[in-house]
Amino acid sequence: MSAFILRRLMQAGVAILIVTLIVFFGVSVIGNPVDILVSPDCNQACHAQAVAALGLDKPLFQQYLIFLWNVLHGRLGTSYVLGATAVDLIVQRLPATLELAFSAMALSISIGIPLGLWAGLRPDAMIGKSIMAGSILGFSLPTFWVGTMFIILFSVELGWLPPTGRGPTVPFFGIPVSFLTLEGLSHLALPALNLALFNISLVIRLTQAGVREVLLMDYIKFAYAKGLTGRRVILVHVLKNVLIPVVTVTGLELGNLIAFAVVTETIFAWPGMGKLIIDSIQVLDRPVIVAYLMITVTMFVIINLIVDIVYSLLDPRIRYQRSAG
Image 1 (cartoon, rainbow, N blue to C red):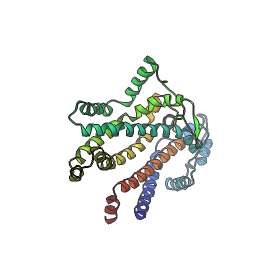
Image 2 (image 1 turned 90 degrees about the horizontal axis):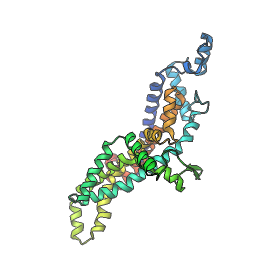
Image 3 (image 1 turned 180 degrees about the vertical axis):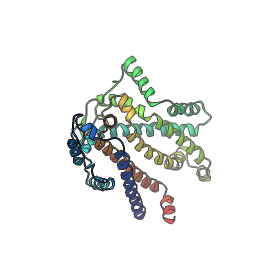
Image 4 (image 1 turned 90 degrees about the vertical axis):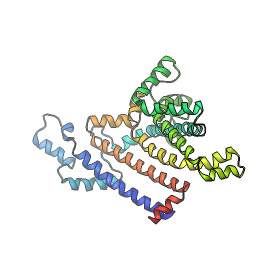
């Protein structure tokens, strides 16, 4: 097990190194930040001084080595526009985005697995067919449209939930969160549900397909033949094997929720990283863009690492097969 984890850690380190290359060279060839920082009436000497101050007069590969050294030490530059360090700006917005993403993932699992299990056990029943038909909507309807409809229905027409904002926050292990207060939960409900719809449908489909496949296995028939109750067979034998692909896919989707919550955050004015990165792209604020990409990619790699470890715990054959390979 330790060899498996060590190998995955080495792979994660290589992946992050490759991403630093892509992020640095991809961002460096886009536009010129000096044009934003200096005034239009700046002369050539002033322009050259600004280029030297940013280190843009050095060869590109040397700039990358400096960038890599700064990344290893957690220094990703200072925002050209806001004047604060890029990491601080991202960290200030990170709790809101993580809260939204984890809430959406919790909804995906708590709603998707029971509905998928029901649809898999009762595929010919009206409820089972309705669940599978409803899951198609989660894949098909665009996020921005669903979010707008949520605001119109639940906020404007019914007045049940607030349309925008995060609401009051309270410290939780030093991190500001809103889900611990009733008003904060009311602000979180709509954006979390909107962000979770696609994943709910995905988990429903995965669980339903897994249940239908596992029920045909010989060990399930043997379990029934031994006289085990249907509830024990489903919870112990069926659900455990169904969770293996569900854990893998939902773990990967958590990274996507964190990285691509921009639309939901924009619609509901949720003060996460989404709005910050959109504003930074518009004004070519390179340090903030790079910091956002590096932090997001690092979280994505860490999530993948955790998923692989959990996957190997659920199915020990995985780590043995990879070791043999």
